Image 1 (cartoon, rainbow, N blue to C red):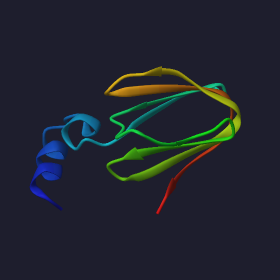
Image 2: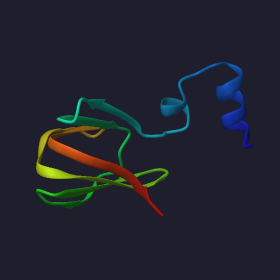
Image 3: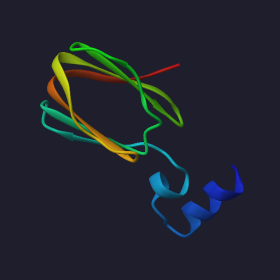
Amino acid sequence: MDLRRGVTEALDLPKEIMLDLPLISLTGREEVTVENHKGILTYGEESIRIGTKVGTLCIRGQDLGLKQLTGDALVITGKLVALEFLT
């Protein structure tokens, strides 16, 4: 375990902030918010790939669209079918 992870856990600090991990929030099957992203890698109506510190996040669904994009967060809407990390 690296020092930063150990300190984060010992002090009960938010891991997504201290370790730059993605924070993924779902609103039903209609919307997903990804914080701490590294950018959009591919974009389509059925699949969107997003870079994160822990790998590529693939969001699959129907009629996917980008509702909001900032340097720290993005919001995708549509009929969500699956979210998976690719290796």
